[in-house]
Length: 421
Image (cartoon, helix red, strand yellow):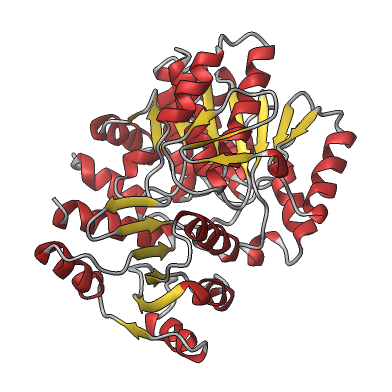
């Protein structure tokens, strides 16, 4: 019998896209194992940026409220088991492998993708663990995403919509928003983060068509505090997560939790405040070292880079940074570079260990065109050496911020866990 880790590796190596859409493949796979999703209740989250953090906030609130809940997110940063959690605890490797064996043994006409297998594993696990609610993050888009196999969720959340995955979702915000709006089904309630007018018009039209009640977080009414934020008619909230954008993500989770409370889930104000304060989400403006300073962030597109620099400007006024950056080739790396260039003292680029990675030298060359000192390094060890030297000699130096693809952030976290003890 294959070892547990070999089972997980086989699933991770499955193809990324199938001959059918994600929702079609997921429907066939879940039907073959008894449709466990039919026995679960969901909060479904779509959007371009902020999905994972919003899911983490809501999952933390549900845990504080004593409601057994599952969390399904992607991608993972270090361990595959990060994708599937119950009450804040990752699925055990042996449990994941047992489910993986069951799914791999199925004889199906259409081979599932890696994501379809992950989705099915999660649904089976959540059913077995008796989850009362599941916080479900879409993988790509919404309408055709594997997660959209579920019936109408109790609540849908749509976080910030921007330009990303345009080859699959469309070239305009209207087209992209239409794909995201595909998770909105008659019978659900909706919560939206603030949106570009084109995206909002699309979401609003979908809600009116299906008689879906919706609320929108008003970004202009959020008041940032030193360690949290306030919102009209709310007691101020404390935040552990850095980044101004996390205030809006937290508020979206709060409004969703209030929708759940309306239909009978016992979520107290104390659970709301404690859950928001305790929520963590790795790789998002995560400070892994204070002296010398090192922060990592999964800003993997133009909007993410803009949110990162906006938060850095507020946290560290008038400072310039050493950025370490690695991105995928399907991102608008030029716009990302133009966004961070005014905040950069120097940039180190790396080619992420992923088949769709943008060569680091291409990125470094573009920064040089923008007038920023930039050099490409062959690997993470070489890129991080100035930081590691500073750690050894205890000298204070320029703040280092490493960001880009979530695959790159995962590489960083793996490296840090082995070298920053």
